[in-house]
Image: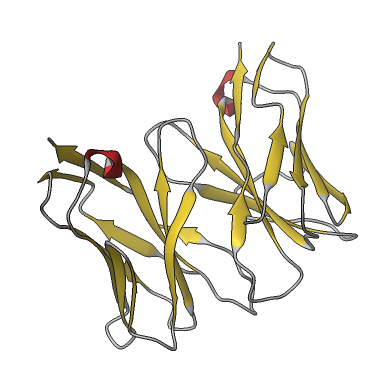
Length: 116
Length: 113
């Protein structure tokens, strides 16, 4: 099956710093990637939809200036959490869809962010 | 937008018995309904999915049923095993549309040996 990787898997940072998370589709091209956030014992909440070569579409309530998304190629999307605060601590998961509109989404392994 | 409700939030089942998890959705345009299994700290794993042109799909011990009229779909796991213990999420989306997955709130399934 299709493989999606994320890096790093775990990151601890100080409050006020920025953290970049990478999402890569390893064996397929993805025009669309999605970024989710999952707090402990809760469901996955979509943050934004990332389309290659265009601006990301953010969900209501998600600050686009705080969560910067770049989808520069068909295999890589990045999420940068700027000026991170403890309330940003969460499990961030990306997913990627292949080129066909009917393709299934495949999830990355997630990144555990802890902001001290 | 789409709203997906999932019940129950927790479910304990004796090993070997069946487990059923139910979801309802609000947007009649949704046409794709996947189910994911998530173990603690891991990524969601797709276990089965169904598209709106069929009413039922089965894969070994797992089956999903869809009632488009009532806008609900269910996951059925038969002959449960301890390794089935996990959190299960249903989701809905519009393939060929915005394709956003809207997730249910999750069901923590515990299989009692």
